[in-house]
Length: 271
Image 1 (cartoon, one colour):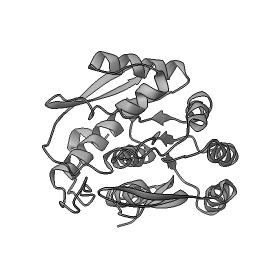
Image 2 (cartoon, helix red, strand yellow):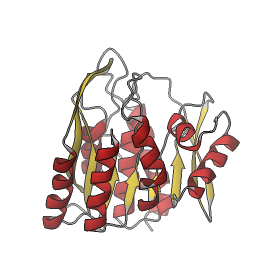
Image 3 (spheres, one colour):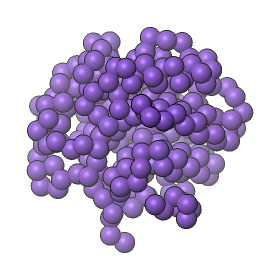
Image 4 (cartoon, one colour):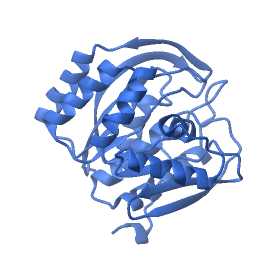
């Protein structure tokens, strides 16, 4: 099987393999594309939490992005953990040079166990500058609350926050609704022309580590193959749901999902 597209992932490493760049690479590969990486930080963590974070020099992050892309040009880019303003500046400089249009930003801010992964200054730079350079942003509810300075309790609040992100310069927004306690998980897609609510069954499991990373990488993969953005979201959500449902139940804390979940694209999604 030959890869159908090439994706550069800019993100932090998760030593336990459930989230971060490991989850991204597994997702891209499982969905049939070729994954490249620019690592922004190295974490020591397991399913119970983060033990330590080692930052990568911003210059080396820039070099990873540029040197890789000059040889193998990515069809799309997925951005995850960017822990400091210097890292964000370095990434933006590299993006300006390589000029890839299909960029999906997952604004990773807090690990599943509660460890903060980005500083306040970096959040402001992401909010005011980086968000305008990407094709899509995929925050969860806590991240959307921080970026929009609003409280999200209902689906209507999610839509309001998504529109606030559009006002800040986002082109497409997918807010992940897993943090609401409803029996049905509602993910909200918004751009200037569309609002779409995706409804999914909630599975009773503690094994959801890496769902956000996985979803953004899945959406990036489908976008990179030329699928419309709304359909890419729908397919990405379907893949993550299958991965949650068939989780391997590893670890004593928040375990990983199953990136090898069998995924068949329905005929209606093929166009």
